[in-house]
Length: 526
Image (cartoon, rainbow, N blue to C red; front, side):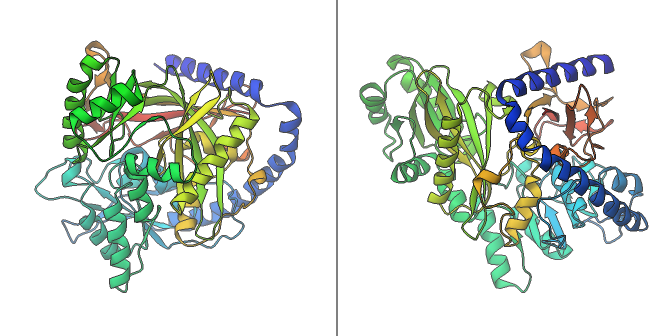
């Protein structure tokens, strides 16, 4: 098993190195050598400081609190505290913490990812867990405190991690000053973000949502409404229909006479590959429409759809943006997410090697324009469809949260996106305000590792994880591209490194309630 994992790691690393050599010219890399040397010095200093901080943390093991009991559940987290402590430098020169305590309203890999950065910043953390996950789940053990969420023993998302009011109640009881939603669950729920704002307004407890405003989430969450906003902001959108008339015969008329085939029927509130149908002919349109509307209603509580011209073999390119509340907005380059299965991404890379420098800049500028159109604040991703035959690109949607594939952006820029999210939520400015100062070093790729049944068409698999042995130590550090201490990565050939983000460990159980992703393998070559 280890030999196979190492072979996969070598293959992924060689792919990253090959892509890197094709897009990074020698003179561009030399421009960043001085910055890399500074990273070395910064990291050595920060590592010594963190060792001192860690020694004080180790003197008082973390305490896990259960909301169902007044008795603390104590675990010896000395090993975990040391193992998951971040030792990477920051773009921010000020070591002041944006918050004293943060609640992470998520589970699994992304919860561990957010907790890791919080620990590195010296921020106390609170986790929540469902009955299925339990207090011994990895993210619960990483946190300083954890609370069970849900009642009646139900572990479904609706009865646990989607209970927004209960999440806020736990935040108030634990003394958390901010809630980080991760991705999925409540991360793009405008009502939840608004409820946090109201709680902070009507109580003496200051509570921040680590994400954009409720209005921005609402504007970009509705695909039809977002396309209207983009058209008014002169952002190119995919040809199609995104009006309010949802009569099947009217939609058929629009499809035949205005949009043309092939086309996509998409749920206006959809995401994650759900609520989407590809239609090639007029004869199959109405049945596909009915099926799509039914799935949209069941999954998102809204049956409205839009029609979108289907581009033949387009590239799926997304641009990472960050914006603060002081009017600064930057793009942190792009990611290619074209390799998908069932409309879900499985392999991502950054930057997109096939884009020319002019197209790359145009796409980045367009992403910033899209964010500014809704007065966006915090981290977000603007997705485009790129037609390589004409070099045209079209706005697809905006994700108002941290993306699953954010690590590859961290690797090529040296930015800890979670740290930036926290500091922006606390009202701080971006540490970089000029687009020209955003580095792009090397090439990175990410592969998502899922639990699947290969004998049944690769459907999600459930059951006990009997053995989990990643090729590198998982969840250590946060942003290895700093080219300083590589404690969270294994060196392969030259300066190539690898990183594993996971929320699982041996003997954990994968259930039907949650995503079957086991971990993410991320590699980088300069």
